[in-house]
Image (cartoon, rainbow, N blue to C red; front, side, top):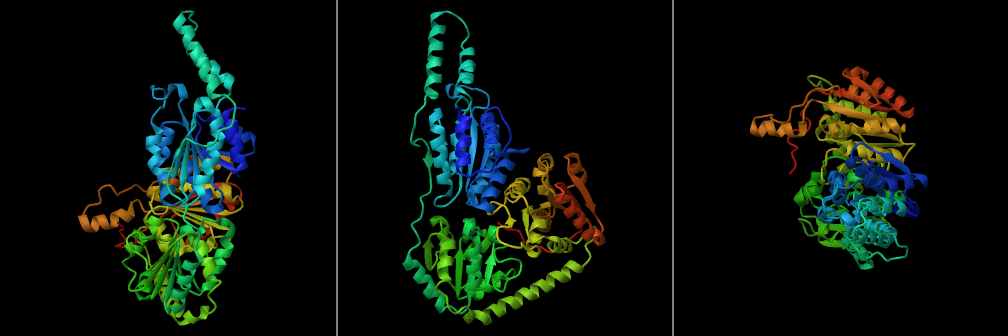
Length: 576
């Protein structure tokens, strides 16, 4: 039993169905043994994509996603995706290869201090030094990833713990040479002893490692009663639900029902988008700032007062109720009147058991709904206007929305085009929307789409890419093609880093660094084994998207290169 097999057995026991990776000699036994146990080994073209894919699995299924990367540059390349998962509070397990225990710190290939690099950005770091430590440390890693405030964890696996003992002994003794001198014989004896020591059987409790973040106390009945009383006194309540409320995929339908029955105008963000479907009487999509200013009660369910909420400033004189797993996020930038440290989904499920008159807010809902209807009309009028030089991005997004299947997952990766889509494209149900989260990371698209395709193999996966962000992970079309998975990727090609350029030019008078070429991304996709479609004529939009859907159902990875025209829809949208 080698270390790779021990790890694979733990992955199987933990319910891992896929392992995302980019191969490397340091981790090869893990990949081989995982495959032997029926775990799909999905090999990508960039380590970041492996971690992004594991992140997506966690968000969409409630299972803890797993990625494995090789030592040194494999680990450093994965760091951005690890940080994105940490800030998004997304649980995942990252296995990292490492140099042999004998060679640690001696300048071997790809040997760096991985603990110093990763430890500040993960919930827990563990490093095995003997084969028998691998399994208990990995079991502990899964536990730490999900408890309290979820997040990524890292387990370092030295290469000599993963290969069979006889192979490690052969490699190790070969390095000592065959000299019969006393010093050489002593060296071989020590090396033999070291191999026996690190491979010695036995059981060990997970001891080595570092951890951050304690689990919050269970939701208290007193806290629930305080929120119930505040809600009962309210005449104009507003509910904001964020990604943290959707961590338990097993009760997502129950949560959706509860939010819908509360009777409170509701805005959804992050992975919570789609919780109420595309159309629901409680769902509000626009003019949130006005509602926050007029509300007398604002309930934040897993939503911190960070830049996405204007640091709390748009909330007027309303009584603020916040529930969050993170004590830090609970009071970030604005201290709530009622602060509940706990699971936001649990609070919402409790609240609906005490709210017996949801119609008391009918007139307030009417005010909010009227504003939504008015804003939708404005967007439709803007979508009908010509866009100099190409397609109107609003009209394209409206066509995408119309083309979505009921069982579709929307992955977003970009700036201006993706933000435009967020106004128009409506996920059809819970856990059908993926965006980077608070870190605003470009490059999540390929990995997130892979995670979506493997976690929901029958779903229609749409990837909305900006032309800038597409370049970060366009090579993953090769991964889709090699593994025979369907994808509909639409690149909004305006030859610009438009979200930056719009304000940079207006404020600083220069477009330096923001200009791109109108590249033939559809041809690049063909080179990677996908199907490329070009869209220039608005009249052909429906037909091209329908063709992309047909091809994706056949297991083809399709990239639609949509040539966009100029638009000022999001003028003045710079966020800091």
